[in-house]
Image 1 (cartoon, rainbow, N blue to C red):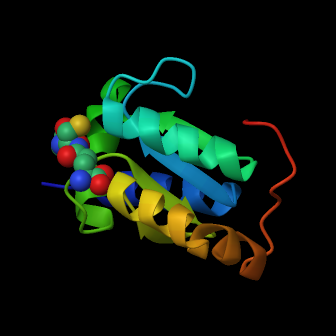
Image 2 (cartoon, rainbow, N blue to C red):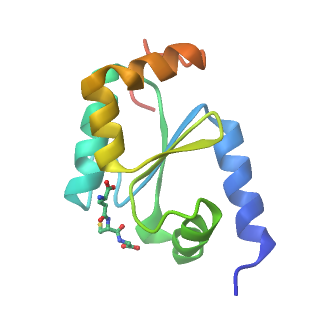
Image 3 (cartoon, rainbow, N blue to C red):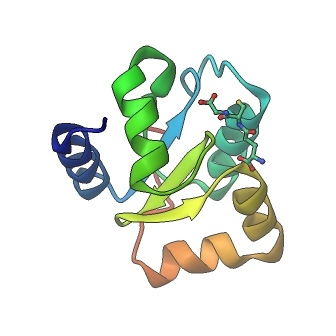
Amino acid sequence: MMTNAVFDRIKEQIERDDVVLYMKGTPVFPMCGFSAATVQVLGQTGVKFQSYNILEDMELRNGLKEFGNWPTFPQLYVKGELIGGCDIVREMYETGELEALFQEKGVNTNAAVA
Ligand SMILES: N[C@@H](CCC(=O)N[C@@H](CS)C(=O)NCC(=O)O)C(=O)O
Protein backbone atom coordinates (compact mmCIF):
# COMPACT_ATOMS: atom_id res chain seq x y z
CA MET A 1 0.00 0.00 0.00
CA MET A 2 1.26 3.46 -0.90
CA THR A 3 1.67 5.92 1.95
CA ASN A 4 1.04 9.63 1.66
CA ALA A 5 4.63 10.24 2.71
CA VAL A 6 6.03 9.31 -0.68
CA PHE A 7 3.43 11.42 -2.47
CA ASP A 8 4.42 14.36 -0.27
CA ARG A 9 8.06 13.78 -1.15
CA ILE A 10 7.25 13.70 -4.88
CA LYS A 11 5.23 16.92 -4.60
CA GLU A 12 8.12 18.64 -2.82
CA GLN A 13 10.56 17.50 -5.49
CA ILE A 14 8.46 18.60 -8.47
CA GLU A 15 7.74 21.94 -6.81
CA ARG A 16 11.35 22.61 -5.82
CA ASP A 17 12.73 22.49 -9.38
CA ASP A 18 11.13 23.64 -12.62
CA VAL A 19 12.30 20.59 -14.55
CA VAL A 20 12.63 17.21 -12.87
CA LEU A 21 13.67 13.97 -14.50
CA TYR A 22 13.03 10.69 -12.72
CA MET A 23 15.35 8.26 -14.38
CA LYS A 24 17.35 5.06 -14.10
CA GLY A 25 20.90 6.02 -13.16
CA THR A 26 22.24 9.55 -13.39
CA PRO A 27 22.73 11.97 -16.30
CA VAL A 28 26.44 11.04 -16.31
CA PHE A 29 25.81 7.29 -15.89
CA PRO A 30 22.35 6.44 -17.22
CA MET A 31 21.40 2.83 -16.51
CA CYS A 32 18.88 2.47 -19.33
CA GLY A 33 18.75 3.54 -22.96
CA PHE A 34 15.44 5.37 -22.53
CA SER A 35 16.82 7.44 -19.69
CA ALA A 36 20.03 8.10 -21.62
CA ALA A 37 18.10 9.28 -24.68
CA THR A 38 15.97 11.62 -22.59
CA VAL A 39 19.00 13.14 -20.88
CA GLN A 40 20.50 13.71 -24.30
CA VAL A 41 17.40 15.48 -25.60
CA LEU A 42 17.19 17.69 -22.52
CA GLY A 43 20.86 18.49 -22.99
CA GLN A 44 20.13 19.65 -26.52
CA THR A 45 17.54 22.11 -25.27
CA GLY A 46 20.03 23.55 -22.76
CA VAL A 47 17.49 23.28 -19.97
CA LYS A 48 18.62 23.03 -16.38
CA PHE A 49 17.09 20.00 -14.72
CA GLN A 50 17.16 18.11 -11.48
CA SER A 51 17.30 14.35 -11.68
CA TYR A 52 16.52 11.53 -9.27
CA ASN A 53 17.79 7.97 -9.65
CA ILE A 54 14.77 5.79 -9.02
CA LEU A 55 16.93 2.62 -9.01
CA GLU A 56 18.23 3.71 -5.61
CA ASP A 57 14.81 4.35 -4.11
CA MET A 58 12.18 1.65 -4.45
CA GLU A 59 9.57 3.64 -2.56
CA LEU A 60 9.99 6.55 -4.96
CA ARG A 61 9.99 4.18 -7.95
CA ASN A 62 6.67 2.64 -6.97
CA GLY A 63 5.18 5.89 -5.70
CA LEU A 64 5.82 7.71 -8.96
CA LYS A 65 4.00 5.08 -10.99
CA GLU A 66 0.90 5.65 -8.91
CA PHE A 67 1.30 9.40 -8.44
CA GLY A 68 1.44 10.18 -12.15
CA ASN A 69 -0.45 7.09 -13.28
CA TRP A 70 2.56 6.36 -15.51
CA PRO A 71 4.13 2.89 -15.34
CA THR A 72 7.62 3.46 -16.71
CA PHE A 73 10.78 5.57 -16.47
CA PRO A 74 12.00 8.09 -17.39
CA GLN A 75 9.32 10.53 -16.27
CA LEU A 76 9.71 14.21 -17.01
CA TYR A 77 7.96 16.82 -14.88
CA VAL A 78 7.87 20.49 -15.84
CA LYS A 79 6.56 22.97 -13.27
CA GLY A 80 4.90 20.18 -11.36
CA GLU A 81 3.20 18.65 -14.37
CA LEU A 82 3.97 15.24 -15.84
CA ILE A 83 4.96 15.62 -19.48
CA GLY A 84 5.73 11.99 -20.23
CA GLY A 85 8.52 9.53 -20.94
CA CYS A 86 11.21 9.10 -23.54
CA ASP A 87 8.97 8.71 -26.60
CA ILE A 88 6.94 11.81 -25.81
CA VAL A 89 9.93 13.95 -24.89
CA ARG A 90 11.74 12.94 -28.05
CA GLU A 91 8.72 13.61 -30.23
CA MET A 92 8.07 16.97 -28.58
CA TYR A 93 11.69 17.92 -29.15
CA GLU A 94 11.51 17.01 -32.84
CA THR A 95 8.36 19.06 -33.41
CA GLY A 96 9.66 22.02 -31.41
CA GLU A 97 6.92 21.57 -28.81
CA LEU A 98 9.37 20.92 -25.99
CA GLU A 99 11.20 24.21 -26.38
CA ALA A 100 7.85 25.95 -26.84
CA LEU A 101 6.67 24.42 -23.58
CA PHE A 102 9.79 25.60 -21.73
CA GLN A 103 9.31 29.11 -23.11
CA GLU A 104 5.64 29.17 -22.26
CA LYS A 105 6.34 28.01 -18.71
CA GLY A 106 9.23 30.45 -18.30
CA VAL A 107 11.82 27.72 -17.80
CA ASN A 108 15.50 28.66 -18.10
CA THR A 109 17.10 27.02 -21.14
CA ASN A 110 20.46 28.74 -20.91
CA ALA A 111 21.95 26.77 -18.08
CA ALA A 112 24.17 23.74 -17.75
CA VAL A 113 22.79 20.40 -16.57
CA ALA A 114 22.19 20.45 -12.81
N1 LIG B 1 8.20 3.87 -24.05
C1 LIG B 1 8.75 4.24 -22.78
C2 LIG B 1 9.99 3.45 -22.53
C3 LIG B 1 10.40 3.41 -21.08
C4 LIG B 1 10.31 2.01 -20.52
O1 LIG B 1 9.77 1.10 -21.16
N2 LIG B 1 10.83 1.84 -19.29
C5 LIG B 1 10.75 0.57 -18.62
C6 LIG B 1 12.06 -0.18 -18.76
S1 LIG B 1 13.50 0.83 -18.42
C7 LIG B 1 10.40 0.81 -17.15
O2 LIG B 1 10.64 1.87 -16.60
N3 LIG B 1 9.77 -0.19 -16.49
C8 LIG B 1 9.25 -0.05 -15.15
C9 LIG B 1 10.29 -0.20 -14.08
O3 LIG B 1 11.43 -0.58 -14.38
O4 LIG B 1 9.98 0.08 -12.92
C10 LIG B 1 9.06 5.73 -22.77
O5 LIG B 1 8.75 6.39 -23.75
O6 LIG B 1 9.58 6.27 -21.78
